[in-house]
Length: 361
Image (cartoon, rainbow, N blue to C red):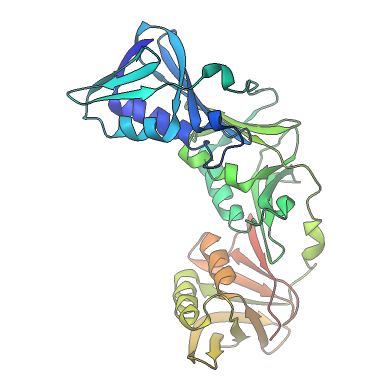
Protein backbone atom coordinates (compact mmCIF):
# COMPACT_ATOMS: atom_id res chain seq x y z
CA UNK A 1 0.00 0.00 0.00
CA UNK A 2 1.24 3.47 -0.84
CA UNK A 3 -0.61 6.79 -1.06
CA UNK A 4 0.01 10.54 -1.11
CA UNK A 5 -2.41 13.06 0.37
CA UNK A 6 -2.63 16.56 1.81
CA UNK A 7 -1.75 16.53 5.49
CA UNK A 8 -4.84 18.47 6.58
CA UNK A 9 -7.24 16.24 4.61
CA UNK A 10 -5.62 13.13 6.03
CA UNK A 11 -5.62 14.50 9.59
CA UNK A 12 -9.30 15.37 9.36
CA UNK A 13 -10.26 11.87 8.20
CA UNK A 14 -8.26 10.16 10.96
CA UNK A 15 -9.57 12.59 13.58
CA UNK A 16 -13.20 11.91 12.64
CA UNK A 17 -12.77 8.13 12.81
CA UNK A 18 -10.79 8.41 16.03
CA UNK A 19 -13.85 9.87 17.79
CA UNK A 20 -15.41 6.39 17.89
CA UNK A 21 -12.40 4.65 19.42
CA UNK A 22 -12.94 4.09 23.13
CA UNK A 23 -10.24 4.40 25.77
CA UNK A 24 -11.24 1.04 27.25
CA UNK A 25 -12.17 -1.14 24.29
CA UNK A 26 -13.47 -4.68 24.89
CA UNK A 27 -11.04 -5.91 22.22
CA UNK A 28 -7.46 -4.54 22.02
CA UNK A 29 -7.71 -4.42 18.21
CA UNK A 30 -10.44 -1.78 18.55
CA UNK A 31 -7.74 0.66 19.66
CA UNK A 32 -6.82 0.73 15.98
CA UNK A 33 -8.23 2.33 12.83
CA UNK A 34 -9.12 0.09 9.91
CA UNK A 35 -7.85 1.68 6.68
CA UNK A 36 -8.63 0.50 3.15
CA UNK A 37 -7.11 2.03 0.02
CA UNK A 38 -8.84 1.54 -3.34
CA UNK A 39 -10.34 3.48 -6.26
CA UNK A 40 -8.53 6.70 -5.38
CA UNK A 41 -9.89 6.77 -1.83
CA UNK A 42 -8.65 6.07 1.67
CA UNK A 43 -11.56 4.73 3.76
CA UNK A 44 -11.07 4.87 7.52
CA UNK A 45 -13.19 3.11 10.16
CA UNK A 46 -13.10 3.60 13.92
CA UNK A 47 -15.33 1.71 16.33
CA UNK A 48 -15.88 0.48 19.86
CA UNK A 49 -18.77 -1.71 18.52
CA UNK A 50 -21.29 0.63 20.19
CA UNK A 51 -20.38 3.65 18.05
CA UNK A 52 -18.83 3.32 14.59
CA UNK A 53 -17.54 6.12 12.36
CA UNK A 54 -16.75 5.52 8.70
CA UNK A 55 -15.19 8.30 6.68
CA UNK A 56 -13.06 8.71 3.57
CA UNK A 57 -10.71 11.07 1.79
CA UNK A 58 -9.49 11.34 -1.80
CA UNK A 59 -5.82 10.37 -2.14
CA UNK A 60 -3.27 9.68 -4.84
CA UNK A 61 -2.95 5.89 -4.92
CA UNK A 62 0.28 4.24 -6.01
CA UNK A 63 -0.61 0.86 -4.50
CA UNK A 64 -3.87 -0.37 -3.00
CA UNK A 65 -4.16 -2.31 0.24
CA UNK A 66 -5.57 -2.51 3.76
CA UNK A 67 -4.00 -2.02 7.18
CA UNK A 68 -4.73 -1.23 10.84
CA UNK A 69 -2.75 1.31 12.85
CA UNK A 70 -2.99 2.52 16.48
CA UNK A 71 -5.70 5.15 16.42
CA UNK A 72 -4.49 7.95 18.64
CA UNK A 73 -0.84 7.67 17.70
CA UNK A 74 -1.63 7.74 13.97
CA UNK A 75 -4.00 10.68 14.37
CA UNK A 76 -1.51 12.71 16.40
CA UNK A 77 1.41 11.82 14.13
CA UNK A 78 -0.37 13.02 10.98
CA UNK A 79 -1.52 16.21 12.72
CA UNK A 80 2.07 17.03 13.74
CA UNK A 81 3.54 16.61 10.27
CA UNK A 82 4.59 19.78 8.41
CA UNK A 83 2.03 21.33 6.06
CA UNK A 84 1.78 19.97 2.55
CA UNK A 85 1.81 16.52 1.03
CA UNK A 86 2.52 13.45 3.13
CA UNK A 87 3.13 9.86 2.06
CA UNK A 88 1.89 6.65 3.63
CA UNK A 89 3.35 3.31 2.62
CA UNK A 90 3.54 -0.18 4.12
CA UNK A 91 7.02 -1.65 4.59
CA UNK A 92 7.69 -4.97 6.35
CA UNK A 93 4.68 -4.84 8.67
CA UNK A 94 5.02 -1.14 9.40
CA UNK A 95 3.45 2.02 8.02
CA UNK A 96 5.88 4.77 7.11
CA UNK A 97 4.50 8.29 7.41
CA UNK A 98 6.76 10.84 5.72
CA UNK A 99 6.53 14.42 4.50
CA UNK A 100 8.80 17.45 4.15
CA UNK A 101 11.48 16.06 6.45
CA UNK A 102 10.01 14.10 9.39
CA UNK A 103 9.29 10.38 9.17
CA UNK A 104 7.37 8.10 11.51
CA UNK A 105 7.33 4.32 11.44
CA UNK A 106 4.12 2.87 12.90
CA UNK A 107 3.72 -0.83 13.54
CA UNK A 108 0.62 -2.32 11.94
CA UNK A 109 -1.92 -4.30 13.98
CA UNK A 110 -3.24 -7.70 12.93
CA UNK A 111 -5.99 -7.00 10.41
CA UNK A 112 -7.48 -10.49 10.82
CA UNK A 113 -8.30 -9.66 14.46
CA UNK A 114 -10.57 -6.75 13.55
CA UNK A 115 -14.28 -7.60 13.99
CA UNK A 116 -16.54 -7.89 10.97
CA UNK A 117 -18.69 -4.76 11.26
CA UNK A 118 -21.87 -4.76 9.20
CA UNK A 119 -22.14 -1.92 6.73
CA UNK A 120 -24.71 0.72 7.70
CA UNK A 121 -28.15 0.19 6.23
CA UNK A 122 -29.49 3.41 4.63
CA UNK A 123 -32.97 1.96 4.10
CA UNK A 124 -35.71 4.30 5.26
CA UNK A 125 -33.38 7.26 5.81
CA UNK A 126 -34.88 10.74 5.81
CA UNK A 127 -33.09 14.01 5.11
CA UNK A 128 -32.82 16.39 8.05
CA UNK A 129 -31.41 19.92 8.23
CA UNK A 130 -28.00 19.35 9.80
CA UNK A 131 -27.89 22.60 11.76
CA UNK A 132 -31.33 22.05 13.30
CA UNK A 133 -30.52 18.44 14.22
CA UNK A 134 -27.28 19.42 15.97
CA UNK A 135 -29.11 22.19 17.81
CA UNK A 136 -31.80 19.75 18.97
CA UNK A 137 -29.22 17.19 20.12
CA UNK A 138 -27.33 19.82 22.12
CA UNK A 139 -30.55 20.93 23.80
CA UNK A 140 -31.78 17.51 24.91
CA UNK A 141 -28.55 15.68 25.75
CA UNK A 142 -27.96 18.09 28.64
CA UNK A 143 -30.77 16.22 30.45
CA UNK A 144 -29.46 12.71 29.71
CA UNK A 145 -27.98 10.75 32.60
CA UNK A 146 -24.32 9.73 32.73
CA UNK A 147 -25.03 6.92 35.21
CA UNK A 148 -24.11 3.64 33.51
CA UNK A 149 -26.10 1.77 36.17
CA UNK A 150 -29.27 3.27 34.62
CA UNK A 151 -28.62 2.74 30.90
CA UNK A 152 -32.15 3.63 29.79
CA UNK A 153 -31.66 7.17 31.09
CA UNK A 154 -28.35 7.62 29.23
CA UNK A 155 -30.19 7.65 25.91
CA UNK A 156 -32.23 10.05 23.81
CA UNK A 157 -35.62 8.82 22.63
CA UNK A 158 -36.15 9.62 18.96
CA UNK A 159 -39.78 9.16 17.94
CA UNK A 160 -42.47 10.68 15.77
CA UNK A 161 -44.88 13.21 17.26
CA UNK A 162 -47.92 14.96 15.82
CA UNK A 163 -45.74 17.74 14.42
CA UNK A 164 -42.64 15.78 13.34
CA UNK A 165 -39.55 14.25 14.91
CA UNK A 166 -39.28 14.43 18.70
CA UNK A 167 -36.11 14.04 20.80
CA UNK A 168 -36.51 13.36 24.53
CA UNK A 169 -34.00 12.85 27.37
CA UNK A 170 -34.30 12.64 31.15
CA UNK A 171 -32.14 11.75 34.14
CA UNK A 172 -35.23 11.65 36.43
CA UNK A 173 -34.45 15.11 37.85
CA UNK A 174 -35.11 17.03 34.62
CA UNK A 175 -36.59 16.38 31.21
CA UNK A 176 -35.78 17.95 27.83
CA UNK A 177 -38.07 17.68 24.80
CA UNK A 178 -37.36 19.12 21.34
CA UNK A 179 -39.60 18.86 18.27
CA UNK A 180 -38.37 19.17 14.69
CA UNK A 181 -41.37 20.05 12.57
CA UNK A 182 -42.22 18.23 9.33
CA UNK A 183 -39.64 15.45 9.86
CA UNK A 184 -41.13 11.95 10.02
CA UNK A 185 -39.07 8.83 10.73
CA UNK A 186 -39.87 5.27 9.69
CA UNK A 187 -39.07 4.01 13.18
CA UNK A 188 -38.16 5.04 16.71
CA UNK A 189 -35.36 4.13 19.08
CA UNK A 190 -33.39 4.99 22.18
CA UNK A 191 -30.04 6.35 21.01
CA UNK A 192 -27.10 6.70 23.45
CA UNK A 193 -26.45 10.38 24.15
CA UNK A 194 -22.71 9.70 24.09
CA UNK A 195 -22.89 8.69 20.45
CA UNK A 196 -25.18 11.56 19.46
CA UNK A 197 -22.73 14.08 20.91
CA UNK A 198 -20.14 12.86 18.39
CA UNK A 199 -22.30 13.72 15.38
CA UNK A 200 -21.12 17.32 15.18
CA UNK A 201 -17.45 16.27 15.31
CA UNK A 202 -17.66 13.41 12.83
CA UNK A 203 -20.07 13.41 9.88
CA UNK A 204 -22.26 16.48 10.43
CA UNK A 205 -23.08 18.45 7.28
CA UNK A 206 -25.75 20.82 5.97
CA UNK A 207 -27.97 17.80 5.26
CA UNK A 208 -27.87 14.61 7.33
CA UNK A 209 -29.59 11.36 6.40
CA UNK A 210 -31.13 9.71 9.47
CA UNK A 211 -32.35 6.12 9.66
CA UNK A 212 -33.55 4.32 12.80
CA UNK A 213 -33.07 0.60 12.20
CA UNK A 214 -33.99 -2.35 14.40
CA UNK A 215 -30.71 -2.32 16.33
CA UNK A 216 -28.94 0.90 15.40
CA UNK A 217 -29.35 4.50 14.35
CA UNK A 218 -27.44 5.57 11.25
CA UNK A 219 -26.48 9.17 10.46
CA UNK A 220 -24.78 9.78 7.12
CA UNK A 221 -23.66 12.66 4.96
CA UNK A 222 -21.05 13.51 2.35
CA UNK A 223 -18.46 13.22 5.16
CA UNK A 224 -19.22 9.57 6.02
CA UNK A 225 -21.48 7.71 8.43
CA UNK A 226 -22.01 7.40 12.16
CA UNK A 227 -23.68 4.20 13.40
CA UNK A 228 -24.88 4.00 16.99
CA UNK A 229 -26.21 0.84 18.60
CA UNK A 230 -29.62 1.41 20.20
CA UNK A 231 -30.29 0.91 23.91
CA UNK A 232 -32.72 -1.92 24.62
CA UNK A 233 -35.55 -1.22 27.05
CA UNK A 234 -38.58 0.99 27.59
CA UNK A 235 -38.14 4.72 28.02
CA UNK A 236 -40.10 6.26 30.95
CA UNK A 237 -43.57 7.60 30.21
CA UNK A 238 -42.45 11.22 30.19
CA UNK A 239 -45.85 12.58 29.14
CA UNK A 240 -47.32 11.92 32.56
CA UNK A 241 -44.83 14.42 34.02
CA UNK A 242 -46.29 17.29 32.01
CA UNK A 243 -49.21 19.04 33.77
CA UNK A 244 -52.22 19.97 31.65
CA UNK A 245 -51.81 23.65 32.51
CA UNK A 246 -49.45 26.06 34.23
CA UNK A 247 -51.45 28.77 35.99
CA UNK A 248 -48.40 30.88 36.86
CA UNK A 249 -45.55 32.13 34.69
CA UNK A 250 -42.80 34.72 34.57
CA UNK A 251 -40.92 36.05 31.54
CA UNK A 252 -37.26 36.98 32.12
CA UNK A 253 -34.19 38.03 30.15
CA UNK A 254 -32.14 34.89 29.51
CA UNK A 255 -28.66 36.34 30.00
CA UNK A 256 -29.70 38.40 33.03
CA UNK A 257 -31.12 35.29 34.69
CA UNK A 258 -28.04 33.23 33.84
CA UNK A 259 -25.76 35.85 35.38
CA UNK A 260 -27.86 35.97 38.55
CA UNK A 261 -27.99 32.18 38.91
CA UNK A 262 -24.24 32.06 38.29
CA UNK A 263 -23.62 34.47 41.14
CA UNK A 264 -25.93 32.52 43.43
CA UNK A 265 -24.08 29.32 42.49
CA UNK A 266 -20.94 30.69 44.12
CA UNK A 267 -22.75 30.10 47.39
CA UNK A 268 -24.93 27.17 46.40
CA UNK A 269 -22.31 25.00 44.67
CA UNK A 270 -23.95 21.70 43.64
CA UNK A 271 -25.62 20.52 46.82
CA UNK A 272 -27.38 23.63 48.09
CA UNK A 273 -30.62 24.64 46.30
CA UNK A 274 -31.38 28.20 45.31
CA UNK A 275 -34.80 29.66 46.11
CA UNK A 276 -36.89 31.62 43.67
CA UNK A 277 -39.73 33.88 44.76
CA UNK A 278 -41.84 34.75 41.72
CA UNK A 279 -44.08 37.76 42.01
CA UNK A 280 -45.09 41.11 40.58
CA UNK A 281 -41.53 42.49 40.48
CA UNK A 282 -40.04 39.41 38.78
CA UNK A 283 -37.95 36.76 40.54
CA UNK A 284 -36.08 37.17 43.81
CA UNK A 285 -33.20 34.68 44.02
CA UNK A 286 -31.83 33.75 47.43
CA UNK A 287 -29.37 31.17 48.68
CA UNK A 288 -28.03 30.65 52.19
CA UNK A 289 -25.30 28.48 53.70
CA UNK A 290 -24.60 28.30 57.42
CA UNK A 291 -20.90 27.68 56.90
CA UNK A 292 -20.35 30.41 54.32
CA UNK A 293 -23.00 33.08 53.94
CA UNK A 294 -25.64 33.95 51.41
CA UNK A 295 -26.70 35.89 48.33
CA UNK A 296 -29.85 37.78 47.33
CA UNK A 297 -30.71 39.26 43.92
CA UNK A 298 -33.84 40.51 42.20
CA UNK A 299 -34.24 39.76 38.49
CA UNK A 300 -36.86 41.98 36.88
CA UNK A 301 -39.54 40.23 34.85
CA UNK A 302 -43.19 40.08 33.93
CA UNK A 303 -45.25 37.81 36.18
CA UNK A 304 -48.75 36.55 35.49
CA UNK A 305 -50.57 34.01 37.62
CA UNK A 306 -53.43 32.85 39.75
CA UNK A 307 -51.23 33.10 42.86
CA UNK A 308 -49.90 36.42 44.10
CA UNK A 309 -46.46 34.84 44.40
CA UNK A 310 -44.81 31.42 44.20
CA UNK A 311 -41.84 30.15 46.21
CA UNK A 312 -39.87 27.32 44.62
CA UNK A 313 -36.33 25.92 44.90
CA UNK A 314 -34.08 24.26 42.31
CA UNK A 315 -30.67 22.70 41.94
CA UNK A 316 -28.61 25.64 40.67
CA UNK A 317 -26.69 23.70 38.02
CA UNK A 318 -29.79 22.02 36.62
CA UNK A 319 -31.56 25.37 36.42
CA UNK A 320 -28.61 27.06 34.72
CA UNK A 321 -28.19 24.26 32.16
CA UNK A 322 -31.88 24.40 31.28
CA UNK A 323 -31.82 28.16 30.74
CA UNK A 324 -28.66 27.88 28.60
CA UNK A 325 -30.25 25.16 26.45
CA UNK A 326 -33.24 27.38 25.70
CA UNK A 327 -32.98 29.59 22.60
CA UNK A 328 -34.00 33.22 22.47
CA UNK A 329 -33.34 36.41 24.39
CA UNK A 330 -36.19 35.81 26.82
CA UNK A 331 -37.30 32.68 28.62
CA UNK A 332 -40.66 31.77 30.13
CA UNK A 333 -40.83 29.86 33.42
CA UNK A 334 -44.15 28.10 33.89
CA UNK A 335 -45.06 26.99 37.42
CA UNK A 336 -47.97 25.15 39.05
CA UNK A 337 -46.90 25.49 42.67
CA UNK A 338 -43.88 24.98 44.95
CA UNK A 339 -43.89 21.20 44.69
CA UNK A 340 -44.76 20.26 41.10
CA UNK A 341 -42.37 20.20 38.10
CA UNK A 342 -41.83 23.53 36.36
CA UNK A 343 -41.15 24.15 32.69
CA UNK A 344 -38.72 26.51 30.96
CA UNK A 345 -39.35 27.55 27.35
CA UNK A 346 -38.23 30.27 25.00
CA UNK A 347 -40.70 33.13 25.10
CA UNK A 348 -42.93 32.85 22.02
CA UNK A 349 -41.71 29.36 21.03
CA UNK A 350 -43.02 25.91 21.93
CA UNK A 351 -40.65 23.58 20.03
CA UNK A 352 -38.43 23.03 23.10
CA UNK A 353 -39.21 22.58 26.77
CA UNK A 354 -37.05 21.83 29.77
CA UNK A 355 -38.91 20.41 32.76
CA UNK A 356 -37.22 20.67 36.14
CA UNK A 357 -38.16 18.98 39.39
CA UNK A 358 -38.19 21.33 42.40
CA UNK A 359 -36.17 20.69 45.53
CA UNK A 360 -38.06 20.50 48.82
CA UNK A 361 -36.58 22.86 51.40
